[in-house]
Amino acid sequence: MYQKYQTEALVLRAYERGEADRVYALFTREFGFVWARASAVRREVSRMRYAMQSGSRANISLVRGSRGWRVAGATAHTHLDIGNTSGVAAFARIAQLLERLIGGEEANFYLFATLIEAHEALMHEQKKMHPVVELIAVARMLYALGYLSTEALGSALFAQTALAPAQLAEAEAQHAELLSTVNKALSATHL
Image (cartoon, rainbow, N blue to C red; front, top):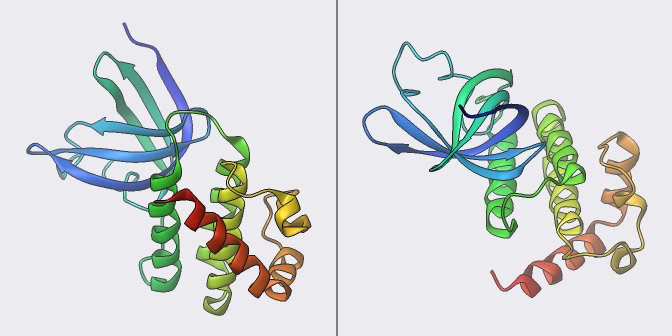
C-alpha cells in the first residue's frame, strides 16, 4: 500500500498520454517540482478534469509509486481567468522559465510562496502591472534558486514574497536596474 500525500500545487503544464491520461508538471509546496501522471483525467466524468488545468492552483493528493508520482485526487483552489490573456501569458512564461531552471524534487517554500503571490497578482492586478509582477517573480525565482544574490541588487524586494503596492512601486522605481540584473543572471545560467 502506498502512502497518499496532500499538498497544494501549481499546475505548470500538461501533456496527453495514452487515451485519457495526462502527465503534469507540478510545483508543490512540500516536494517542489514533480512530474505526476493522472489516469482517466481527460474523460468527461473525471472529477479532477477542471482542477488540473494548466495554470491553475489546486489541492492535490499524490501517491509515489514504483514508476513515479501519480495524482490520486484534486480539487481546484483557483483557476486562471482565460479572459485575462495578459496575466495568463505572463504566468505561462514564469512557469516555462521555472521548468527550465529547477533542478528537481526539493521543497522550496520561499519559491512556492513567490509563485503563489505572482499567480494571485496576475489574476487580480491591473493589466499595466503585469510586466512588473512578472519581473519581480522572475527576480525572486532566480534569488530562490541561487542565481541572484540580494547584494547584486541591494534591494529589500527579496526579504518577503508579498506583492503589495509598496513592492510594486519599489520594482517600478528600480525597473531598469532590476531588469539588467535579471538578464545578466539568466545569461549566466546558459539555458
